Length: 275
Image (tube, helix red, strand yellow):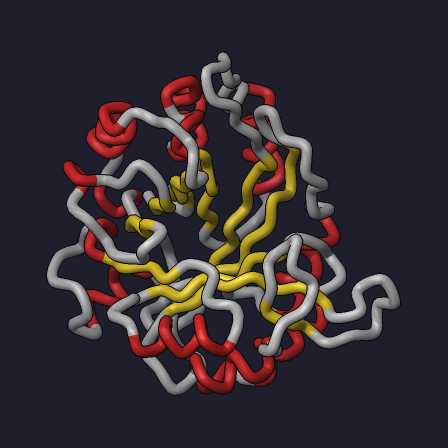
């Protein structure tokens, strides 16, 4: 991952290594706090040992299009926390951030807020959206061109987290990421200059190893974010194979439901991982 230390697109491993928050250049050391949305969760995340804090953004009154960005994940549509208040607290920490968008409406006002505190937020900043339909996915995607144009016009030096919508059913043959899916993503990202991480579902990795390795090898700006649903079933061996075939710089970190990083050999059966 490229980028100068201390900038939003800076290498997340270098940032935490050079600020003495991790001991080796291995993403498995990085602790993530997931869904730090309401004030209670935000406070817990700030007080935790997490290096990176992930949160979700919606636009209050999104149907009218005139609300302010709030911290919530669908189906929740209300929150006791706004993005402005969230940033005001996070800026006083050394934690990196990842902001997830489920619709386009909240992106522009959120980028305007981020732009306003840029000088006070010198650490990794990741901006995430599912921009393409993926395996078994049914959720609406965020328009790729409009999302990327908006983000890069206000905040050109962030790390982009660009994913696919997915689904998974137990005791069924779940399709993985197809060649068409990864090639379309590669085409979209080819003209970008920012570091890009691709969120992929752990339960679909085994079906997609060749495709994902091909995608990563398209640019040294690319990495994977491996995540899992609470009830997903996946093979630890498949994830180990993927890790062993990647440089550790691509293996970013792991975030369980409890938001505690575990050694690779003890990856949880549910939660979220970053490669």
